Every structure is written in structure tokens, then in C-alpha cells.
Image (cartoon, rainbow, N blue to C red; front, side, top):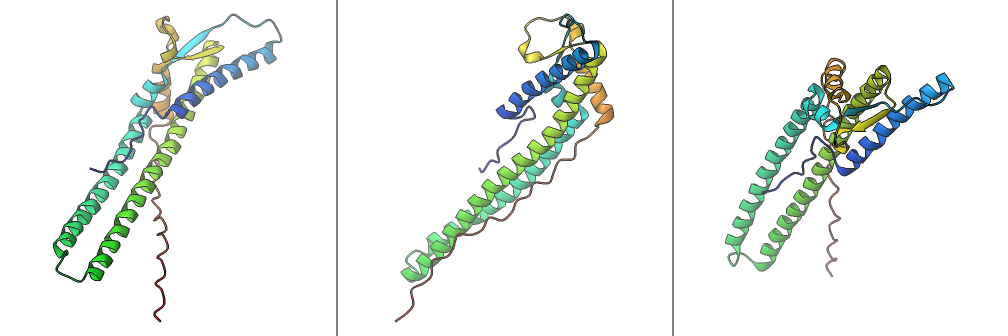
Length: 214
């Protein structure tokens, strides 16, 4: 069965790397802001912890993102299953014609079916990339909301270091602000508009010109 690739709600490896970089950036902005404002010896390190994946998974916007992505994926999957079944039926019908029609006519039908299969494969690949692109756009909006709110909470708590929970072995419970992040995110960004995947029809390969009859 044809399967359309999923993009998990926790993102690709690139997205996870971007999360770490953005968290460090948030912490850096907090530190720089205080240093410029106070012009004094840096304060002791005060850290907070946030579970970005949990915020993505449990927030209203994160759940909306997953639901919309799955809806588009199921629609594309149904379309491709129907096309695949039609192609299989055409292949079976073609096999029955073997030896019952002129070889030239059979070859022409076989070539036409082959072109349909190639076009189907190209459309599948385009659809997968389109779904991935839409997921990346929606995930970026969600991440912007999570990291922006994390920066606000860091300022309010006087924290100058933000750490992803997956990188922390031990910590005090009050350091984990994930619940606060989710609560604020639900108020400010209750849903995500998932871009409709644009599945452009790939251009068909040029048909070889038939030699002119002499």
C-alpha cells in the first residue's frame, strides 16, 4: 500500500536543532538585556526548564496542527489508493489482451499504461513534499509562540538560562515552566491555520516524436 510520509509533531531533526538554538537565543537575549540595563557584575545563573515537545503535543494549537495534518494526509491517501487500484485493474486488463491483438497495438497500450504509472509516482512524490512543507510552516508558527512565551516567563522569573527538559537529568519542580507555557499559549494561540498542501501537477516528460513516414 502506498504510504504518504508523516512528519511527526515533534518535527524533523532540523526542527529539533532549531529548538535548541532558539532556546539558547532566548536565554541570550535575557542576559544581554539585563547586562545593558544594570551595567554591573552578572547575576548568578537562574535557570528555567521547558519541555518543548510536551508543549507542542498538549497545547490546543499543537493538537489542531496534528488534526489538520492528518486530515490532509488521509485525503491524499484515499486519492492515491483509488488511483493505484485503477492502475492495477488496467494492468490486469492489458494482460488479458496479450496475444489477442496485434503486437504493435499491445505495445502502444502498454506504453500508455507505463506513462500513467510514472505520472502517478511523480504526483505521489509531489504530494509528500507539499504536505511536509505545510507541516513545517505550521510548526514554525507554533514554535514561535512557544519560544516567545518562554522568553516572557524567563524575564518575569528573573531567569537568565533556559534549558530544554530533555537535556536535564535533575531539577527542582518549580524550575519546569512547561505548564505555564501551555496555559498562555492556549489563550493566545488556540489554533493553527494549517496551509493547504499545494500539489502541483508535475510536468509530463516530452513524448518522443514519431519518425516521419517516407
